[in-house]
Amino acid sequence: MFDRRKFLLGGTALALSGCKVFDSATDRDSALRALFASHEGLTMSAQRALIGDRIAPEFAEADIRQGQRPNGSVDPDSAAYRQLAETAFRDYQLTVTGLVDTPVTLSLADLTALPSRTQITRHDCVEGWSCIAKWQGVPLGTVLNLAKPKLTARYAVFHCFDAIERSLSGEVFYYESIDLIDAFHPQTILAYAMNGAPLPVANGAPLRLRVERQLGYKMAKYVHTIELTDSLATLGFGKGSYWADRGYEWYAGI
Amino acid sequence: MPNGPLVYRQRLLTRITHWVWAVCLFFLMLTGLQIFNAFPSLHFGKESGFDYNNAILQIGAVDTGGNLRGVTRVLGTEFDTTGFLGVSDGEVRAFPAALTIPSKTSLATGRIIHFFFAWVLVGTLALWFVASALNGRLRQLIPGPADLRALPRDIADHARLRFHHTGEYSVLQKLAYASVLFLALPLMILTGLSMSPGFNAAAPWLLEVFGGRQTARTIHFLTMVALLGFFAVHMAMILLAGPLNEMRSILTGWYRTDGGKDV
Image (cartoon, rainbow over all chains, first blue to last red; front, side):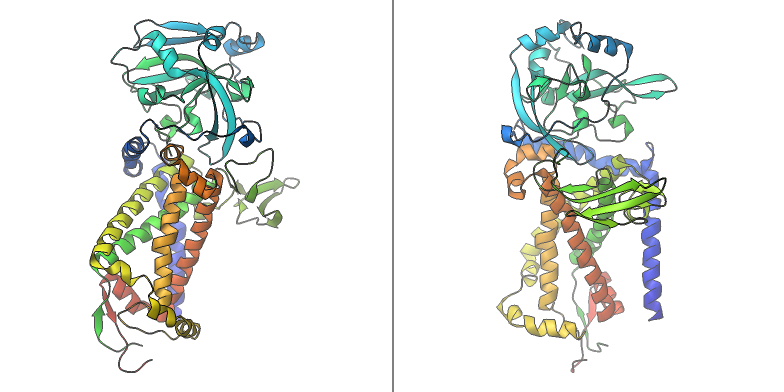
């Protein structure tokens, strides 16, 4: 009987200490973290093999039962953004640059004049919640084609107005990237309207990205520049996005 | 105590996969609770209701005049769970640090460890299924007509803590192991995949089967609770049936059976 109790207590102690033992995995440079993160390439290849160019599920009007829950930045306070917001984004310009033959700048009027796509989709936050909303915008592929991507381009990088953190070296503006497979997917749009109204500031006005087969943090809000590039090494800490640089997966299909 | 001959009961593959699964489930559960803590609320349906209520479980905290209180709401009924759920060590967090990996709050780290062990589990489970289908072991876990006839007797024996040590599983053992391997773990994997927006594009029908992403998330959580229940019973049975003999069989494969007479 005594042995049994000792066994149980020992088991409890192991369970309690077991959790702290793995805390070193939270360090960006730890070998333990690298081991655990080694599945990321496999996860992405497996997902890509399974989904090909299939589309994310779309929903009916009746499935829109609430407003789109905003998350992350909800009201950027940079001077440039405030000024644009005060004049209803009349002077807003989207710049497409980088590995393109003809860099272009487009006003909101230019963007809304292009053929649009409307989709009712589910937004999945990495935290675990989901919210269904209707999005209208220009297919990203249409916009990229206006600038004529060079053959060497592999990624589309999104630069945003919202400073998500203030570090010692200044403000860190949100940045995100996707590869050209997702960029040219028919459901990947630059949305300027949500639930039948102009995109609200809290949800990324005037223009946000929708990448429906990935998690919410991939869908950059307040986008002002799209840069085509062949490498993500020089962006941020080199992982390709604000959140990927902070330990989240760059390919957020799960 | 059994005093009959030793029999070779557990094949090497069974022993290896058993321990790999044990390690996987340990990590999957504790990183799963870390992930759950990022949004400690379970819902039914396609989405999470914020402007309406479709929650079945919510773990939160309320500030009662500088005093933090952990509150768990199950199907509309509130429970004060201060010290365990909602608030622990004076900190607002759904599940306490002792039950999450890592112990501090890190959704990103919880996720990479969770998916790492999810792959290991899926890989070893697939290997075991193929090998066991080929060597006939799979059939030994599925109760047959003779097993079902023996069910009342086996339940009565277990209730009296009379265990038979033979080379074969009893019908309750078969039912327990089969429900974990053929029901709980596949359900865990499928509901987990149903939470992936990428996988949803590959198999939208699976989302329909589960009734939406948030229902899949809820089933994923409840299946974890069921597996925890299995673990508790599994441990109790090992202790009651003779821990040394049981551990020997799952470590070396050799199991001491009953002698001529029942114990």
